[in-house]
Amino acid sequence: MSGVGGVYFVAGELSRLGYIPLPTNRNTKGPDIIVSNQDFSKTVNIQVKTRKERNRIWPIGKPRKYGKTLYVFVALGRSKERPEFYVVPYDYVSGRYEEWQSKNKPRKSRFTFNFTFKKGDADKYKDKWTQLGLD
Image 1 (cartoon, rainbow, N blue to C red):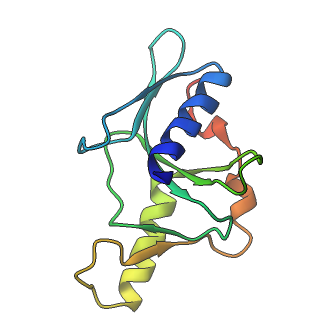
Image 2 (cartoon, rainbow, N blue to C red):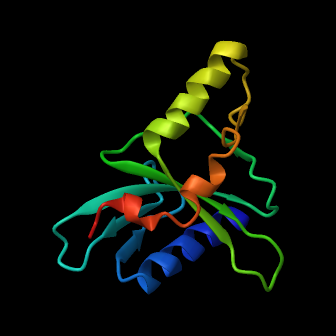
Image 3 (cartoon, rainbow, N blue to C red):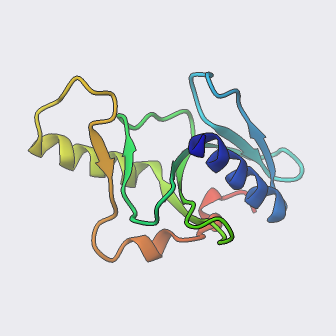
């Protein structure tokens, strides 16, 4: 349930910021949200990954790119706290995956890669919605 909640928290935040978020169906292969600017002249695909804790470790599969793709990592925290959002370019996520893959043998489990930020990088991506490039 936290995954679905994360998608809707991201959609709500995008709407609050003046963008038009279009969440996809949960079982759709592809992005979790397609987001547009107000006149629909630009769009971006978003993959959302959600954690209940704020430990900044998200289990994800192999990164997937669908056109211009960004990842939004959501840390939900406690029930009355605002979630933390980390807006991360696809290339950063895929680079972290490649680093992990070069050090580990592939396993059968779908969620073998635990995404984490490099030391000091998390703050660079926290609430960086300008990376959408929709303005």
